[in-house]
Length: 96
Image 1: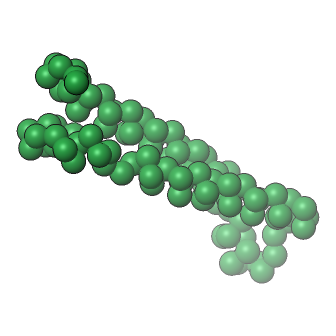
Image 2: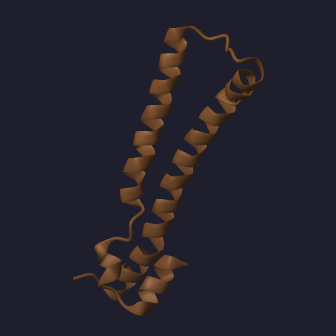
């Protein structure tokens, strides 16, 4: 069994780790959005983009990989069983 002090530390550290992991993925997604933001604008205004089929397929692959990574992240962000079994005070600390 964990000591009360260890349980409190877990209540603080676990959500910080989740937040950090989420920030990493948010940064990766934002980087991709910033990199390619002009493509949909150009496509909307001109009807074409200056990319080869290979480059378009690579872009689709990159977006797909990021989407998969974010989908996997949702399981990481679920509230762990540890907190479901914990006291209301610890749950409140986790939720804060």
